[in-house]
Image (cartoon, rainbow, N blue to C red; front, side, top):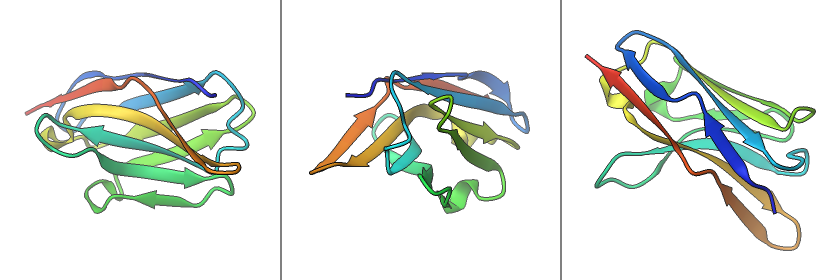
Length: 118
């Protein structure tokens, strides 16, 4: 079982940048997909960005060109660099891991708040 802990959230003005980090308690090398999701009250959690174990990335249309996801399997960390932030990026951001051993296992962090002021 892998524990995920996010950090780096906070309050930033529109146009600014934040860097979210996700630290895993164990190795993420065997985790097939690492990703970041976000959720605002009253809405479903949505995928922001994901990265496979081979480095393939996927981004929500709303963040393409502004956000960059990366993973460092040696340090067991996943990072989300967020630039040109907009008020609509305000949400709780969650780190997620998806691993296939015999069955799919989902790992979630506790979330970190990102607030973008206009």
